[in-house]
Image (cartoon, rainbow, N blue to C red; front, side):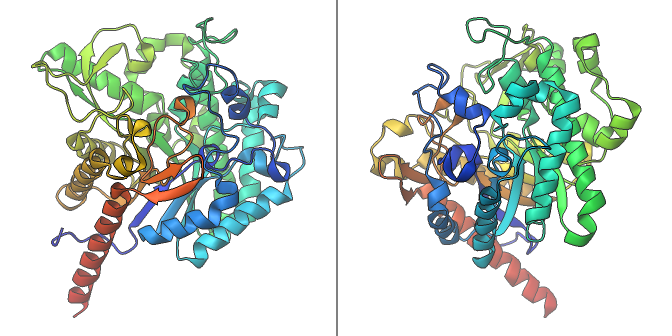
Length: 484
């Protein structure tokens, strides 16, 4: 690290999402979101938990800012709950001034501590009223206009202080988990054991298409009406993990590229946003089910994101074959041909450590899309952490191992490979409501006792604080030497 020279404006921070931490779901005029209703349906979360309290951060935000300050972060990525701003969601519905005031107070409190707000406009919590009124993300004509209006209100209210905007968090999860697999709100799926309505063969592609159009329209609003006076930047954050062939079989090598095309090029609409077209593999796989952009729409979508927001957690070994379109008709595994595992297993079945994949993915994305990268989410859930004593959970060795490997991989990508990485946000500041997993899965660098809501820094949080301090001192030292 002593030879590492990161820019002084590199952003170190942690990330959260509104529904996962705020609680107070009916406070001060907030309207219900699709996750309020969905998480209360028996069987939709593993432990029966919901977001009514979460980590009580709506009431404890000052405590959380003090926690951020103790970790020495420069930035905090959080999301705004649409239904706190417009309880019914629509462009002709009343605006909730109390909701605007709460986020304004949060932003002011962050800035007072020298912490830069990095704001996500949409992190999966669609106002329930819009879903009930016209089908939410399934209705292009209505949802695009309503989202653009919501974005405009946020730019007007907060843009004098917020200079970093993310329009959407992970269109893949919105579309595939919400309308394909049915694991996430609103829970639509062709699986009638899971949902009484929905069509997994068409709806995910319609929803993803509409999400990306809404993103592009919000970017247009920002650039035309706010960017010049406010001086900020706007983009989108997309999820996707590195894919490697299971072995040197040509079929598996080709399948690994297909898996990347699906997870990275199409389902999160990277290729339309950055290149202006879908991957050819997706066209062949989906045929007429793949929505087409009009010439006017693709002109709006292409180049709409000013940077690359990168959410990534793991690496998958890819085997040719399979019938899952959401995985590009390939099979995922962590088990190598010799029977060994790719890395350390997390509590989630889909996550193992593999820092080499983190570095490879950053190189791939930077070379393909040629945009500066913000790592907007990256984290690890320690296996069985919720069943440990607090003292055991605080000594989260596997999470430290994950972050240490990924820090080394990121620094190598920046210093040795020349990848332009502008920031890193660990997921997550706090243990919290982990969507369909409820409270059993913990991603936080801070342990939350859900009975008392007390916060306790884990070894991983302390580790990342030390890394940030060391790299900051290295940059200051090298910069001073350059000046001298």
